[in-house]
Image (cartoon, rainbow, N blue to C red; front, side, top):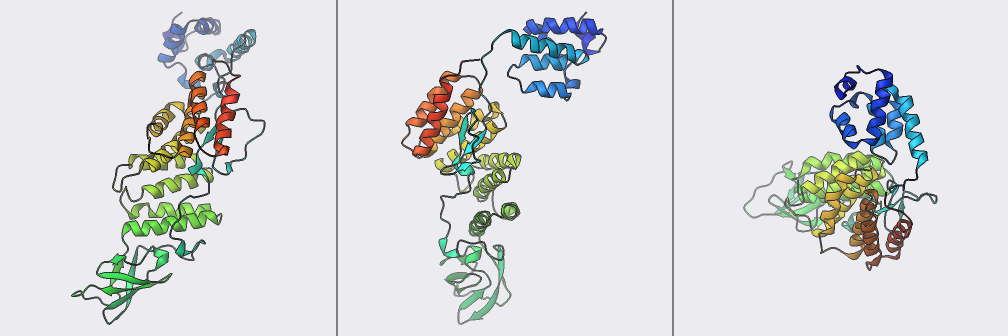
Amino acid sequence: MNIDQFATRDLSAAEARKLAQQALDDPDLFDALVARGAAEASLNAPAVQAAISRPTRRVPWVIAVCAAAAAVILALFLWRSSSRTMPQPAEQARAIVSTPAILPSLDAASNGPVLLAAELGPSRSQNRNAFRGDGASNREPQSTGIVTAVDDGEATVNLGSLDGLIKGAELGPISITTIFRDHARGKITPGQTIHVNDRVDVPPAVHLSAVLHEVDALAASGDLDQARALGRKALAAGSSGETRMLLERLAALDYQAGALDAAREHYEAAANNFFETPAASPVEQATTLNSLGALYLLRGDTASAVKPLNQAAALTAIPADLRAQVLNNLGVLDEMRGDLPKARDDYNRASSEPTSARERSIAQANLTRTANLKRP
């Protein structure tokens, strides 16, 4: 009886059971079975999928390897689990907490670790050109317009504050001096000739700023679908550096809409563009990396969460509340990986930051909860 026979299903049921029992207590044999790819064909079996969520890594794989005798191996698994007490590893992170509001509402009965990622919440700290008004407009910001009138060295264009224009904005040879919501006037550069119906282009950075404002207004009104559609449509309107903040905002809206994979992809794209002009500030970097790490942890992907969270922690020029969020999430990462002493240290550091009482209480609650856990 050998591994090759098992891989080609040449073993009898009795021989397969015997090999499986040996693999339970022989790590080398177990690794060899996995290396031979014997488990691949049965990974989608219901019994295997049900077992994958269990805390012990080796046992579910053995069940997969022994699909030919699944019922016997499952019984053996249950017997082994009940015959000895094993400390439980950390539960998967169950919720994201946004400052100051909680997203989503926490289950009071939940004992799992709690993540902190304020950027994923609906509230925005940025004040974007308040003169435009708080509500969504009845039209999208435009990236191009036309000259509608020319008179005595001045030109009128069908673009205005809704399109991001501010006093002093340059639309080619036109310097804007007077702004309304949907149109504006400006002086024509001496020596330049402008005609009615000439096309004018809004600078990409100005247009994207207007799009961000409109996206926020739509989201605030509860229209996440339209906000996300407008944001995606505008991604081609500027350079990778200019569209980075739009990617970050889209990621937060994706999360709120329940599209976690889209949120993760948008954060990954934004992180890849940190050093494109205009370069991201340390605060922007840490915020994005922290949110990305939190999304990985929500998926249970601790391996992918390591890099962004450690990169965020290495940034020193960030405010205390953001540092507390990063440290708390590092604690969740360590807890999920089974390193309870390091998790407690991170939670303790997070709760010691001079930040809001809400964030301190969450980090402290994570710390208190892990005090009674034992290393698996």
